[in-house]
Image 1: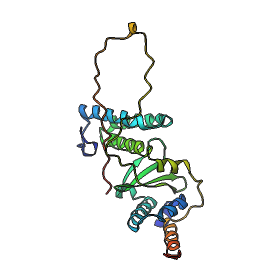
Image 2: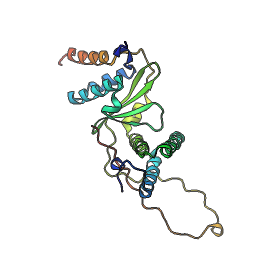
Image 3: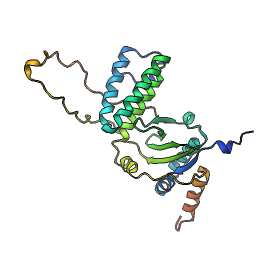
Image 4: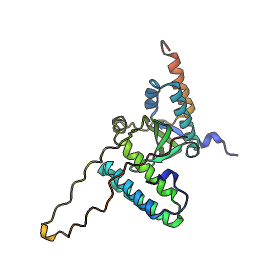
Length: 111
Length: 133
């Protein structure tokens, strides 16, 4: 099957479309049902954008994202992280956060 | 003149998650994740890394940090962002058969059209995405 990542930047050929449809259906089956409405909404937007621009990269990006989401939805560690979402706190500069983590680690006994 | 510092996104979610992860990660992995976080903060991540959408959740993205390391971030209002996940991605070589869909209700045989055979090719393994840069 044609690799999406290596498709030429031209309009999708019919063979590609069939392959993409198969990949889409396969990936969609891995997603929980609650997320499918959003996936279909995005698909409609992607199709509309592709029709306007003839740019296959929007379809490729969508499908890669779909496959990635489906893969992650099968990962127990990821699902656990999703279930343990924190509430947003005070915004902090990322450099300060990283410096704090690294400094704390160096200051730990035995570090 | 615009101060570049003012344009940076600031982290308002996931500090504890990052600290926990950093406690077990190698320095090489930490450097790679820190680099990705700086790129998220200054907005260059879409140029420096492969970024994929969570197609189920608006405003949430997977940043492919290394071949087997993914960072998930969420973009928030007021120029802030959050860390939702840091860890391996589910790298599966041979995808199992997807969960079976519930078959549609069957109709009495008399009303069924003639079987034209299966026109669908067997389901293929979802293609793996680009390797992270």
